[in-house]
Length: 279
Ligand code: PAF
Image 1 (spheres, rainbow, N blue to C red):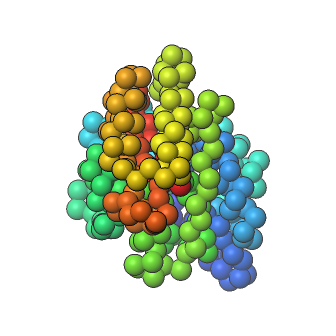
Image 2 (tube, rainbow, N blue to C red):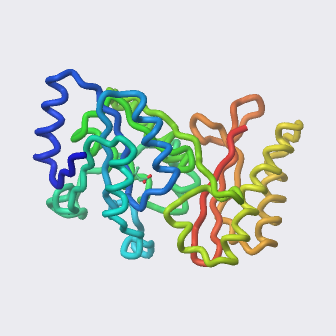
């Protein structure tokens, strides 16, 4: 596996593969890889001649009081895992490589509508930071397809919309969420949880499952269902940021008969967990 540290080296290799008419699958990451990432690599590997990944803890998607400095960085073990999972090239840019002029006056990509609620409201600037870095990475890697986890459901739908709206020649694939034994969606941030919080965390997916079951059984009063879920989670120690039912394709308010998804974010101690369930 090649490790490249700047966009010149990256573009040189991509150019060679393009000349050879190789197809490229891409899995962008912020490192600290877990089974969730590895399943995305697996999904990508089967679909193209070359598999490219990137590790970059993108400062543009962190708010001023968020965990940028303490975000886990485990480069050596990540590279080993990438190699073992068939990755042909990993791009390991520095901040200077991707933001040579800094972040203050950078052109950004704002994807409307789908970003209006949820993470868009709770973490101002976060989704714009994600769409901007993903477009930059797409321009550099020029992938035929890219895989993103469904755990970050809003991020996935936002990227699909960006690709459609800007006519980017990249197929976007959503990878299924991989869960711990207790149902907790895998995330690099789970390691911030204490042992007791880890046990408590099971309640989040259980609650998503209970609410989904009621909707599948015919309940249509989504507002009441979400209020009940929020109260149940609060009683179990979660500070719920949002728990809502919305449309799968655009994350707008739920309409009975459409494909729906329940999205939620909740804090357990100092750890913010997000999860969802499709109905
Ligand atoms: O999902 C992530 O890990 C990040 O948001 C991404 C897509 C790698 C962009 O920094």
